Length: 380
Image (cartoon, rainbow, N blue to C red; front, top):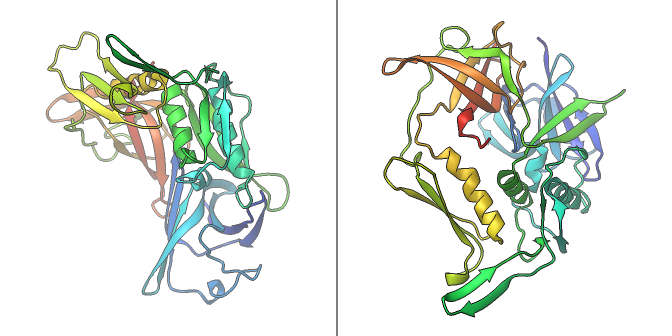
């Protein structure tokens, strides 16, 4: 397998210029993530004269929030990321890159827009469209416009508050709002929508047509990206080299979730979501998020979180070797794969695991690190 690493300049208008066709990167790690920004890290050592000074456009070759690095294997782009920070230690230059959607992390909305009876994914698309419509914000991301959740949010009514003999009453049934006075994390807003209204997204990059053209794409899945894969498997002693560690963390169990949203005191949006039929001791997990501005949003968050707090032992990571029963690259983030494990305490075990991210290191051929979670923790 032949790997190649390229550098390109993003211009912020949806275009880019190839800067270097074959960088001498080392210690490369490529992580592709479900519903989050991908990552790419690498080092260069020793310093190469050809990489010092200016690039072909007269600007520094490695410039944060300008340079994007690509990892290519046999003409297929396996990873990509915008350079966000670098460091020098002796002769080594370290490079850290974030997936394109990560450019929206911690960034504000400008102006204001209210959504009434709007498909949830159209709001997610509107957030990305807003950022890409701002000067210097166009990353060239092409959005999947077809996928729908079938869920619409936002109404014409505003928040209503009044006092009764039994105390204050407050409810909000107003529009979903994006505004410069309240929205300060565009990527976080998309992630909250994904959590509360049950959809996934995934970022991919691919060569397109002739020349150096690259297509950057965001695909959505409702309710999920990926499928239950019965054609591949992860088996300890077969393609999982090291038996995975399992644990039940201190905060892994709750019999209910108390969600506190917008507002203060008695008018605060809040909801207790209990687990029906729970036989264990009462234990409540508390979540606070002032961005939850309606009763429905508060309930959605609690209902999404409670299935994750079953107190079951969990596997969070597997080291998977290339094998006929699960060749590297045969799965995508979001797929569910059955894992057959063994430990001294419980013996043989089987569970379905959902793949959350995959990390590959080209210098460690034939192996991948896979972040996973129990599939039975995911709401059906």
